[in-house]
Image (cartoon, rainbow over all chains, first blue to last red; front, side, top):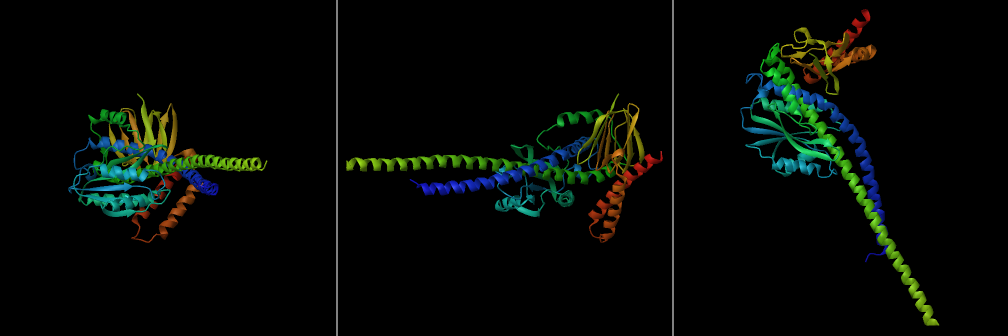
Amino acid sequence: MASTRDIRRRIKSVKSTAQITKAMQLVAAAKMKKAQDQAANGRPYAELLNKVLVSLKDCVEEGVHPYFSEGKGDKTLVLVIAADKGLCGALNTNLLKKLVSTQIEGEVDYVTIGKKAVQGITRLRRNLIADFPIKDPAKFAEVRVVGRFIQEKFRSGEYKKALVVFNNFINTVTVTPTVEQILPVNPVTLGGKRNFGHAIETPSTAAGSEYTFEPDAATVFESVLPQYVNDTIFQMVLESRASEHSSRMVAMKNATDNAKQMVKDLSLEYNKLRQAAITNELLEITTAKMALE
Amino acid sequence: MPLKLEIVTPEARIFSDDVDTVVLPGFEGEMGVLPSHAPLVTTLKPGELRYTKGGKTTEMAVGEGLVEVTGTTTRVLTDMAIHADAIDEQAVEEAIARAHKSLADLKPGEQQEEVAAVMAMIQRSTAQLHLKRKRRTL
């Protein structure tokens, strides 16, 4: 049985932990708001660009642009986007679990964004070829470097395709680890809603009649596709960041709640002990008095 | 038959509504789009985009991007789209001056990406300026 002093000490330590988690929760909540807005604002552009390109893919002949068909090699390039820091619940663990459970044929090379991704890939003893540190909040210029790297690798013909593993932000409490193919161009889901259903319909009216390209298909795609890859990766980074801050906020909120509950339980125990001690003392006094009479 | 115009930039969905006609700066010069236009895909050049809805014409300055035209929709994906009224001429002039300065500061040969980004920035700003000046002389 712990003494009252031990319990008092524990209450004090749990209280200060609660204060820290509460502060972290507030910081995460502020960052979350920004990250969520940024992710939500970028989504329409990324989605529409993806829709347009996917619908165009069926309208052009094969080989008009290398990004529309699989590369010659048989290796796969995987970009893993994870958080830089922990303390955000099972976010990074779930992402790595998803990565491990995804079956990829042939040899796989990894590119990472975020410290937790590097750690995970190293621990899994996978072949890591590059790591890009991206600050928070993410800047497009930084992410463009990653996009260019992936495109260079894909164009070298060494790789069959390029995948991205990232945390798709759905809402504050729901985050889904997602694997999407970025090259060759493929329908990509951002923010959880796969609203390609109606999107594919619209272009199909035009699919019968061929698209005219001005000046020609190759030139149009050459200017648009690299931009598309960079932008999509940027959007995925934004989704990951929104997921990270949301998960951290939720995790910290849970921690704070748990700490508060613990303080409550401990206080109860402490009071019981104190009461028991008082009762004991009273008992002793009365017995002593009775013995004297 | 209405023509649906969608203008989207990485920051936000700028415009999405039915319009009567659209005139936009395509790769091979200014291009008018009416409902039932033949399916077309082209790149967008920095310049001026006009759309008419119910006899009222609205002008916008746009940046580089992609245009997809189908019979019923026109989708404009661009890195900039600003309504003519929202253009702050002085701020734009300052931005151009800043861009020219940073262009001069950059070392040649190095940072081609940066140069390209600054050039695009100048083109975008110039497009805004042209639109604003034109409206004043009218």
